[in-house]
Length: 390
Picture 1 (tube, helix red, strand yellow):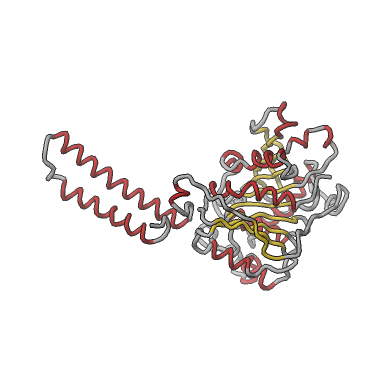
Picture 2 (tube, one colour):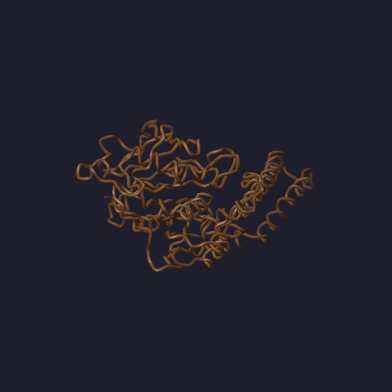
């Protein structure tokens, strides 16, 4: 029986209803010593509560598709993932602009800046040239008037004398909704994995700016410039690059952006809409259409034009394809409107000069374990599609 779908829910619901009824009917009918009768009653009560908890867990898993199979639930992750090309003539958007190229001379308003809060203790100062450093910062933007706490990973090369005058490529790394930035470091281990890929010569060093796209908590803005509301897309696509360029030795153009779930939708939208700064994006189990639910509210002020402009499927079908590269990862067992079917619809619309690769897993849920399977290859892919350190 599949872990997902109504058959399992129906079986669990039957148990959740039958066990309390059986407990009631058998409560006074147990025979034997007092300790046996009391033990049997406690056992029936425990089984009744356990059946209710398991039923709720199954319903939640059906809603969020966190685990796609029994093997994944027991810790067996999918292995046979392969990279496939969808459309486009080849990797594009590898900007060769140097430190003085386009974007380097953008005026920086006094209110657009990065403020260092401290070191999170991921490495000691003696380890910076070999392990790198993660700084906790606050990024503020003048265009959006928003600010956000973020973690900035600086690779070990940033502190090595031979790279003292090097400007590094940058990737914005976005959580899902609501998301915790520390999960990107402690649970998913993006900096550790990036370090391993560089040491193995499968990737080049890059700076990572890690943050949650939920800048107006608890509202899920879907990285949208909300009319008369928070200008989240402006912050992520314009303010943040300006602030980071002013604070670190990074490349002005040819940035990357990646994220999972809502972060995947945001990464794709930012890259598609701002190819002047971003050349590549990675979407882990993301989706490609606009959402409106009790966490988002009306993000478009009643405007059908704004709604369509934030629908990536509509945009790809009705507007010129963007000159950027995208890697899409998803499993075939992710169901629902935000799952595999949505990804297939989006991929069917891809055309030049939009360059898209895919990693389709045979099974996997909407969870960290599935992201961990594809993360190394995704980081290698992203590194190959970003500007080189100069």
